[in-house]
Length: 316
Image 1 (cartoon, rainbow, N blue to C red):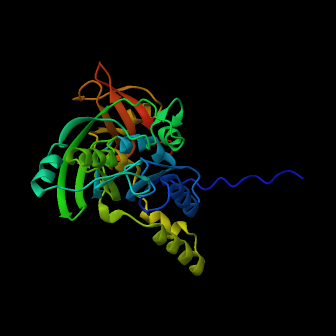
Image 2 (cartoon, rainbow, N blue to C red; image 1 turned 180 degrees about the vertical axis):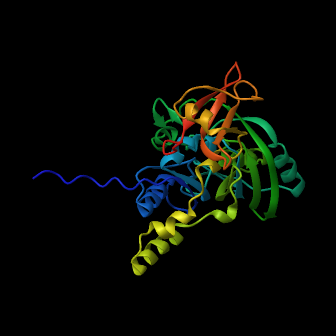
């Protein structure tokens, strides 16, 4: 007997804003959501540590083509740090490697926090998902191996103190892509001379997505169960939660094409557009009077729009 064909899932296009729970990896959360939606293709847009909670945009189907724009977008976090203890992972999942007395005034703390604002260079933690020779850094770190890491330019647009009680410091951070909050906390602890590590981290924003649009795994599972009880397709309750594909590129300038021009762009051909943006700018491309999203493109030296990523399911 031949093998039964493997069920691959259904085609789903869109983005769900998952409120990731603590204690699981981002990939585990992704797989759970993918199974709930019975989706053929899915990917997340920037891992959160198991300790961390909060906004984890998950892209389904055609939305995965535009996930890089969310990876590259600004992020917002709320973090609680404990002063006086440094850990090998810079968070409470690690082992305490140093304990020091805390002699920190409010003034000292506020001045130190302020020093992180603006452009700085940051050396990523060994317990990050960045890769060295094809392997994530955390795999080396778990074996006690330290490998060279290059400092990377980051921007902290805003960092503010919310609370300072005893050994606890609570802050809000608005930062650029690639910023490691636990590295900021570890550096802050060293600056204050007492050490510090993250005890709570919550991502409250990615790009311009609204906080209140997040959904939990429990909410999704409850909708799945409700669909079973009502004997209806789960997609009837789940799919209305999906955000449109173009929300992943909502920060890009829009270029609207006439349907006849869009027909060429959708075949991958460069097209001439009036009042073209500057060379090299990446734009969000829409079509017709209803501004339907068809993909993203880049402006070349001649002012032509060159398609870069197109929505496959779109018909002209």
